Amino acid sequence: MTTKQRVATVLLCALAWIVIDQATKALFKQILTPGEVVSFFSGSLLVLPTYNHGAFLSLGAGMSDATRNVVFIYGVLAILVGLFVWVLRTPRLGRTDVIAAACILGGGLSNLFDRCVYDGRVFDFLNIGIGQLRTGVFNVADVGIMLGVALLLFRGAKRGPTLPGASTA
Image 1 (cartoon, rainbow, N blue to C red):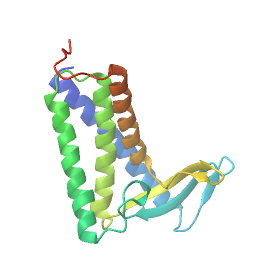
Image 2: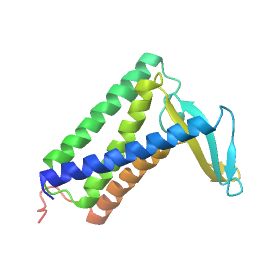
Image 3: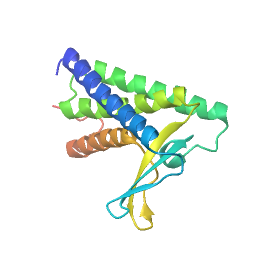
Image 4: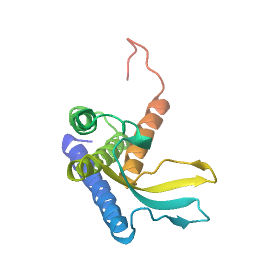
């Protein structure tokens, strides 16, 4: 892929994740009241609106506001900028790598937008599981981030390890 193709792909895919995530958040904020739980598929999918001060599974929610802002706003922004620079400067990236980066960028930017607008919090509303075995509460942006990470890990495992000094031809 050319640089122009990589940038266009990453921007369009990331924008799609942002639009879908923000649209689903707006929908569920409008139709659900705080504390309400809606069950689908015999409880395998729960929809429950909540604002999360932390990250994945509320990790970091107990940090002070200042520390949480540094980590979850400025730290995440630095990671996202680094990811975009990686896409820009790595000419041999495959389509899967670019799409994976776009998923992470879109999800990360959408959650970052929430943090900037909602006093450092992210709106989460999905929970899946069977019986007592359940995920934490998450949103569509989190799905994008996890999909992107999974794609990158899959591609890395598929390529196999490289030894120092080995040719990459």
